[in-house]
Every structure is written in structure tokens, then in C-alpha cells.
Length: 279
Image 1 (spheres, rainbow, N blue to C red):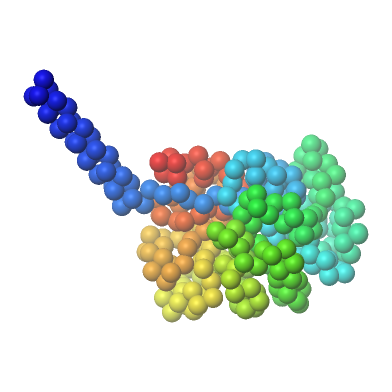
Image 2 (cartoon, one colour; image 1 turned 30 degrees about the vertical axis):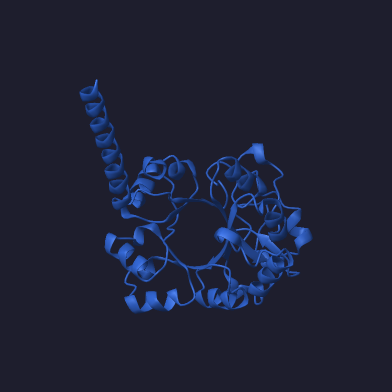
């Protein structure tokens, strides 16, 4: 019996060592939770930048919704991606040429499917009031050069709701306009910020990354920009990487292999169902 018990103990110890080794290997190979950011909501499943798309992202258990903020003619913050209305509503012309009341009369859902006929353009306040505390919110300042003062308006709305000191980075602000990011960071120093980067930043230098890192916590590039070497340099600069915009499983798989920290996608299931994330 003593011999059998000794053999049993040896087996248990070996199994424990195997488990620890496997865990260490998972960590060394970058097995980690990759953040799921629902691009304009779950926009592969519902009309982008609508309450329906944001609710769908929440139901699909995305970590964040990404929203685009612009201003109406009367200075109200509205959530829409294009600076014109033509693609995603039954309106025409520039967003900034219409008052909030006029924008609210538009149909922002029928273009996607009849199931969403009558879906409205939401305001910034409607979105953050509905989803604060339920899901993270990645706020993009869309074409802020067209809307002087938009950074202050966003900051004021967040401060009014005590959302200017977010816990667990649940509020993040980003823009392609890096001056706007710096302005916003000065207004909201405790809120994480990110710089968006298109393909023109393919040759970004270490010096430029260091400049970004002085005010930004995230470098969020076009996914086609990334190489293993660039991923390493961004991380070495102290920033996380949330590339955009994944629309296929193959694209998500490639980004997982590169070791990104989050993925901005129209289809949240391509990210959160990935075996690396759940492994």
C-alpha cells in the first residue's frame, strides 16, 4: 500500500508540474484575453451607430462599443460615422447642416434592412446614459476640425455624469485628428486616449511613437499597417494596440497571431470566440 501511495503522489506531482508548465507556456506564447470592440456597435448585425447596434453588441457580450461623435447645426452631439447623411439615412447633405430636431426625423435603419426601419440617429447623451456601467465605450471624435469645441462638449457631458474618472478604462477617447486628442486629454487627463492611424503611418518612427505615448495610451491603426516588428515597437513605447476594422474570421486570426491587445470589429463573435482569447 505504501508503495502504491508513493506512486500516486509522484503522479499527482507530475500532473501539477505539467499544468504549471502548460500555463507558463500559454503566457509565454501570448495567450491572453483580447478585448472585443464592437465597431459602431455590432454593425455586422444591425445598422451602425444606432441604439439597436449598441444593444446587440451588449447582448453579444462585447467589451466595448465604438461610437462616432459629430455636432448638429445647433451644436448637439450626435452619433453618426459619415460627415454626410446619404449612406446611412434617408437624408442628404452634411450632418452639420441639420438641427438635432431635423436629424431625429430621419430613418437610420431601413438602409440596413426593413427590420430596422425607423431607427433613429442617437445623441451622445442617449448612448452614454443607456450603456454606462453596462459596457465600455470607445468614443471617436469624428472630423473634429469641422466642429470647433466638440472636445469640450464631450468632456462636459462626461463630467456631468461623473464619468471623467472612469474605472477600468471603461471610457476611452480617440481620433484621427491627433491635435484633437491632445486637446481632449488636457480636458480629461484621467481618461485614457488613443490615436487612430491610417496607412499613411506605415513608416511611423520610434520618435513619433514616443510623442504619441506622451498623451495617448492606445495606438489604434488600420489592421493592414501592422507587422510583428511594429507591434513590438508600439508595445515598447508603452501603448496598447486596438487595430480596425475586422470583417472576417481570417483577419481576426491574423491579428491574434500578431499579439494585439484588442480588435475593433463589425462582428464581435470573430474575436470573443477565438480559442486564444478563451484559452
